Image 1 (cartoon, helix red, strand yellow):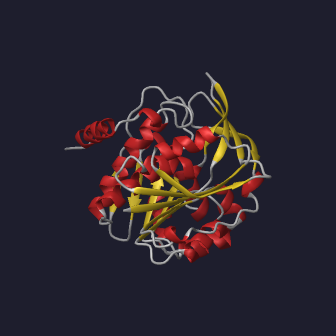
Image 2 (cartoon, one colour):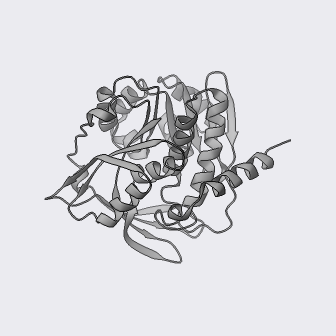
Length: 301
């Protein structure tokens, strides 16, 4: 089964209290695609980079069996760059700079072989951009999208139009509160459901994630990590791991989505143990399975 991931492919600069790295591989599309690739699927990636994007980074994606037909390279442009700084507890991140470059005017055109893909993940990007992708799809079985505070504030009308077209919205707790104006996450999720999605998944960082539909509630735990190196991309890895599992079993039932969320939490737990995708490059599926079983045992009662 195939998964189409549409998102950013970036060169990141990340500062933590202990270390700084520059121009490392990042982007919502990258983290989600690599996370999905741990499951037996074809992962297709749509994005754009500039002439300065290192071949070594596309090699990493190809080594994870990510199909790059949809990754456009603009030979006279520069890649999207982002810089961020984390505080001691990693719960606060300051954006140091954002250089949109080639992504500013990018209009995605899907390869013909991508248009009938069954599972679509719209990683964090402009809702106008995300809607244009949906318009090009034939008949996807499951559409999941992510968003962020910037789009909630700046493109609210387009975001509401997008929510009427998707099956699942993923966002974090502060974004859910911003979108609805409600501090209670259960009520916030119920409000979001009225915009159109059948399910809302709210990420809560080290406290896991909750899934709410009109008739169900589920709380997926986070895998406990003693030493966090870099949480950049953890939410995208969660979503990518979730999508990877769902596509691999070809099942979107309530039970399958609950299992998928736990797999997503496990894949995200590896992401935060090193900078960029350095930890993911070394992960074996046996490690993912082991942590999945640990979380199963942790919530059994």
